[in-house]
Structures are given as structure tokens and as C-alpha cells.
Length: 465
Image (cartoon, one colour):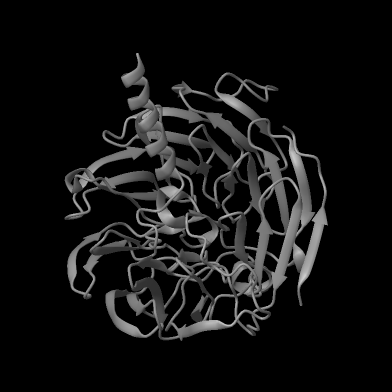
């Protein structure tokens, strides 16, 4: 069944040195709008592209139901996103000797194990990294990174492999927060290094979720691997050398759990790593780990991640009992940018509001508009925060994975596995395409490569073309 809805809403409307600066600006904009390579999707939300793909080779009109080019079952479970480098697909998974697949939102909330505190696991988990062929989904290799009994439980809707790997042109990096373990593998499956860390104790034993962030540089010696560990015992941001996993710097903040993934932003020429944690958003200088700016006074933590373009950082988050804040922070500011009581903007804060923050899906910014999804689709003017529309998602089914942008369309999958396509712009136009999936749950974020969109369910990875 295809559902199409349209709501019409009016849109709100010296020479060599100058050329050199213009060229630098064009290059910076190009980096923000495309992944490391056009056909790659190397980490969570594609890396610095933040869910925006330059590729436009996906079908303009999908058949219904869309026919999967291939479907490959994945042993165990995980909400980690598949990532793509060249002709290879990498994904992590947690294989238990006992245990059911993750449940959807309603099933997870009603599960007895999450009414109070999840029981501590008694059986071992084998955490694995899996490599598939992009062309046909065939298994190329898999390796067990570590086998252990998790120190803490998890929510019935979460998994023990929710953290998305990251990859360079020749190495894939995996992290498992419940095991406190990192490892790097070459593309043939041989381990290059490993690193042991403390397992993360997360609020209410909901389980971990923050993915790795790889910041690559033409000079590989200055590339960096970023790991966020915000939990109930400590809150640490680690900057590592991707070549050997050795620590370069760490930044501490007040403890408190978060499931968001850091983003890389260039703020007036300075590379920053920006994180959302309990009560605040903090930006750190990439090279040193020094705090550059922060926005405090937030009465919530972060399940979804932030988004940015060349002019501002945008975020909106919520948790039970919070005011669900939403903010736009402009470039070029340092220090404590927290708003005074009863203020909604400042020279640094373009606008802010409440009762608008999202739950799990991270927002996307395209052109003049900022979009949030979940049970509803909400569009804002990015410069003013003016709400353009707020509409129920087709079918009213939850979207848990993050949306991705291809051309003028925003793609996502609801938890029932139906493909949702929303056209960008001030008018709400949404299409729901039933994929025919049954008895599977979809909470993972899709990945894009050329003419392919990959999505993971509780049982398998699907490739649609």
C-alpha cells in the first residue's frame, strides 16, 4: 500500500586572496555534503556528511513492494548500522547461546525484564565483525572479537551490538560497550590491534549505543578515532590513534548516560568534536581535547545525535519528564553559551524551544530546513526555528533508525520494515512502501552506496536497488 499526503504551506523566504578564500569555502561545503568517497558509507550516518549522500542513483519510482536485490541473515543480533567501503559491507553482531531477538518499542516497554531493572546476563556473548559482498550479500568472512558474559543487562528493545563500526580505506574498527572492547581489522579479517576498556554501566540497564567516529585526514598520521563513553560511573571522551589504538587525549565531564554519537564540525576553521551528554552539549578541539564551548541547562540526556551544516549546530532531544529542548547554535562562538533563564536566543543561540526534541532518530538538515522524525515528521526553518509543519508519519508507525538524505528525498524505515520517503522542502509529501517484511523489527539506520540502500532488521541485512 502506498500512502501519499501533501500539505501545502507557503515557503518563508585583494582579488587573488578573495578567490583563494572562496575556493576554501567551496571545498568545505563539498566535504559537508558528501561522504569520504561518493560510493562509500564508512560509519554511522556516513561520517561528516551526517546522513547526506551525494548519490542520486536510487530509483526515482520504486516498485511496491520494493524487491530486495539480496537478503543475508546475520547470526545473533545488533542495531549497528551496516557500513560500506568499495565492494565490502561490514557489520557487527552479538551472538548469544541463549536469548531472543530484540523487540519493538511496545514489546520492549511491556517486557517484564524492563519494568524495573534488566537481569544480569548469565550466558556468554560472542561479539563478532562480519564482512559481506555488496554485490550479492555473500559472506566473505567473520571474526569473533571477544567472548564474555556481559557485566550489565540491557533493555529488551536494545542489543549488545548497537554501536556502528567505522572504516578507513583499509581498516575496519569495532567497539562493544557492554564488553568494554575495541579492535581493528584489515579487510581480510586479520586483527591489527585491540584495546580493553571498562564495560559501560548505563542508566536503568538500558544498554549502550554510542558509535565510533573516525576523523580522516590526507595525512594519515593526523587521523583520529573518537570514542564516547558516557555512563553512570564516568563520562569520558577518548581520542585515539587509528593506527594502534593508543590514547592521544581524553576529556572528562560529569557522569551520566548518553547514547548519542559525537559529530565532527569545522567551526570558523577549527575542527571540533561535539558531544551531547547528560544536561549539556560540549564542543572540544580535535587536536588537543580542550573544551571550546558548551550549552548547559538541558534537563535531559541524548539518545539521538546532533546535526550540523556550515553555519550552525542543531539538536533536539527528550526523555521522560524532560522539557524536550531544541536548539540552533551558530558558528564563531566560544565559552559558556548557556541561555539565561527565560531567554530563547542570544548572539550564539540562533533560537531555541521546548516540547520539540526527538527521541531516537537523529535530525537531518537539508537546504533551509531542519527535520525531525519519530512517530511524527516535523520541519523547521533552520535560521529562525519557525515550525513549518508537524504531521503524523504514514501508517503512524514508529521510526527508530536515523533518516538518510539522497538528492531531494529523505529515506527511512519504520520499525515494521516499511520504506518511508519524504520529499525535502516546505510541503509535506510522504510515501510509504511496504517491503513485505514480516515478524522482523527494524531499528537500524540505513546505509547508502551508489544505487543501493542497505537496512538491517532483527534477523538480516537487506539490499534494495
